Image 1: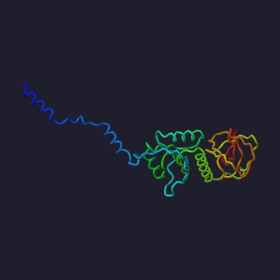
Image 2 (image 1 turned 135 degrees about the vertical axis):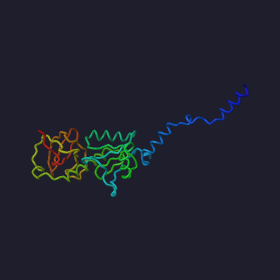
Image 3 (image 1 turned 45 degrees about the vertical axis):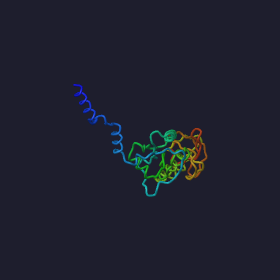
Image 4 (image 1 turned 45 degrees about the horizontal axis):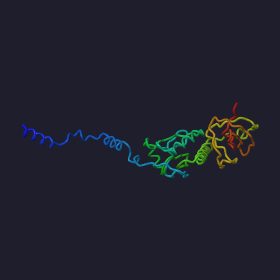
Length: 229
C-alpha cells in the first residue's frame, strides 16, 4: 500500500498545473482596453506649466464646436486644466470642453493641432497652449470681435445713438471684451458675459462707449450693446 501511495503521489506531482491557475483577468482587461482605443491615445499627454500663443496650422480646419464657441482641450487629473475651466466659467465665456483622454475624436483633433500638452484653448484660428488668464481673455475677445465683424453691421443710427451717463446696458452677445482704447485692435482689459449689467460712464468715441462693470472699466463696441429697461 505504501508503495502504491508513493507512486500515485509522484504521478500527480508530474501532471501539468491546471489552466485555471494561469488565469490573468487584469492582463485580459488591459489588452482589451489597448485594442479598444486608438494607439495615439496611449501616449502620455502632459500638463503645460507655461502658456504659448500660436495660430491654428494652415492645413488644419477649425475643430468642431457649436455656435462659434471656444474649445478647451483637457485631460483627467490635470491641475492647470482645472484652473482653465474655473477661469472660463468665472468670466462667462462660451466654450466647449473636450477631454483628450476619454474622447477619441477630441484626441484626434488635439493631435492634428500639434499641441505639446494640455490645457489647450482654441478660439477661432488662435491656439493658446497651457493656461494664462490674460491670454485666454484676449483670444476669446478677438474671436468674439471677428464673429461680430462677420455679422451684418447695425445701422449707423444704432451705432451712434445718444446715451446718457448712468444708462444701463447689456451685451447683446457674449462674451464682450472691454478694451483699453476705442479701437477693435485695443488690448482687452477683461470680458463680460451676455446679460451682464453695464453702466455707461462716458465718453463715446469711434462707435465705442466707455462703460463699467463693477470694478472693471473699458471701451465696449456700441453695436454689441443693448439698453436695459
